[in-house]
Image (tube, rainbow, N blue to C red):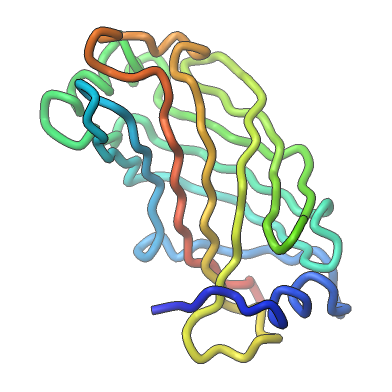
Length: 189
C-alpha cells in the first residue's frame, strides 16, 4: 500500500525549499487509526480509539514550525475484548462520563535521521503531563519523491497509566501503554 521513504526522499522531504513553509493537512479518518497495546495477565492486548480529531500543520523545511493537536473521544475506547472495553471506559480507568476526551498538543518538534521527535502535553482524566512522540513519514506507492500532498505518518510513544490516575485493575493490567497512530494525511488546498 505504501513504501518506506527512501534515503533520497527523506533528504528531499526535509531539506528541499518550499514555496509556502507551514502547511495544514487533513486526516483521512477512514484510513487512519489510534491504537494502543497493553499487558493483560502478561499477554499483549491491542485496543483502539475509533473516534478522534486532529489539527495538523507541518513544515518539512523547518520541522520546529510544525504543530499537532489531537482530541480523542474516550467514550469510543475499545479495550480489545468486551470485559476490557467496559473496564477501560469505567471509573477506575478512563472514567469517560467525567472525562470524555484525551487531548495532546505539541509544543516543539525536531528532526533527526528522518524521524521527528514531537514534545507536547497530554491530558488524560484531567491530568496533564509531558509526552514525547516519535513520527515517521511515508509516501504512497508510486508517488513522486517530491510530492508532499498525500502522506502516511506513523506516530508512537509510551505512557504510564498511573501518572494519570487510570490505575484500576493493577493485578491484571500492566502499567504502560504503547501508543500507535497510523494516519493518512492530505495537504489542504
